[in-house]
Image (tube, rainbow, N blue to C red; front, side, top):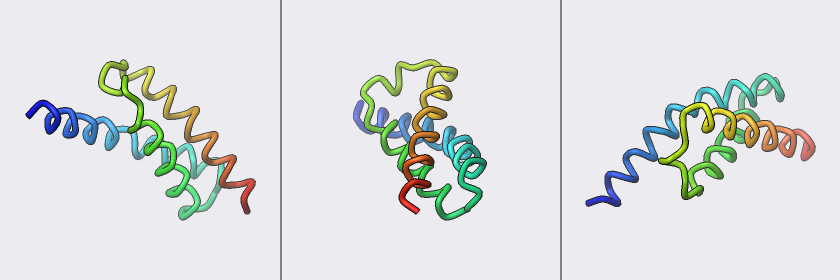
Length: 79
């Protein structure tokens, strides 16, 4: 039962970061499709971190920003 609760908590946290990641990516890329891909990439990477549930909201936002910027730059370089 604990795994199901943890999965639910992880989904709630990631959904809370989704729009923030997209806004950052869209600002950098100025393209909706590329921004969605970059945000998705960053959120997938965040979701794989073990300490996701233990991080403060501010630390998660900082981590999300860093990973989204990196994913956006990688996406932009591939164009």
